[in-house]
Length: 313
Image 1 (spheres, rainbow, N blue to C red):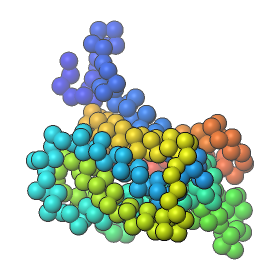
Image 2 (cartoon, rainbow, N blue to C red):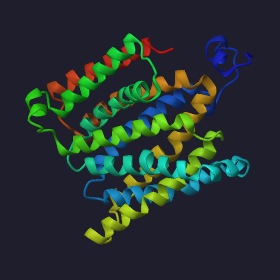
Image 3 (cartoon, rainbow, N blue to C red):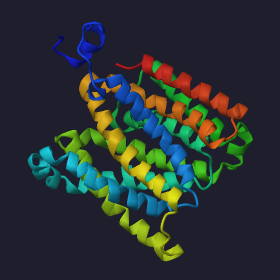
């Protein structure tokens, strides 16, 4: 039996190896993670008219926080002093990376399609690459630079609906703009994680989830004051359960386990499947039209991802 989990993926003969459960299959765990995150775009679109975007953001974390804290109960006691010492940093990360991103994501669904939402999210790795170069002096390789340019070009194709004149005339869909702002915030959050406190991943997730819950209260109150309290419909409640149990909880555990088994470099590659899975889900589940510019954008995104991976250290 190899000593390292990653060795088990290649050196164990499938005919003689003991049967492994889901928790020991990193490729399956990470693929399921990407599918859960991709389904979030479909769920965001289904939420329109069924539950308010700020209400969904608040209730999502209200459901998810107890689940995450229960999962983190073994390490929270040990990590609590460090978390308290960095409470302001955690509050800001939760506010921008979780609350603001999700609120803008759900709000964008009122103005744009799930297919656009899935493809535009592909710009987050490129934004992180740009931010790392500008803020930390990181020097991207030539393939990484070309990959980022190709990915951003794909996002521009989606935002302009294949017509560059729309960009020049600032005729971009409002929902696409909201989602781009959300992606910028998430890229900032990803870069800020470089300086996160030295605690276990599950404890940090628990602290971030609590910060997201607290910072989602003001926009929830604003939405209730403006539109009145609207309880989610049956479909809205289903959307809420998916958002709370899937993207906010289960996928986080799957991703952390995948990183534990094969390392962050190899696990991070699977995030690139999100816009691809999401595009096909939007067409198959919502019946959204797949237009020529979507295919062009998808080709640019996939090509950009491939180039960027060639440039990985």
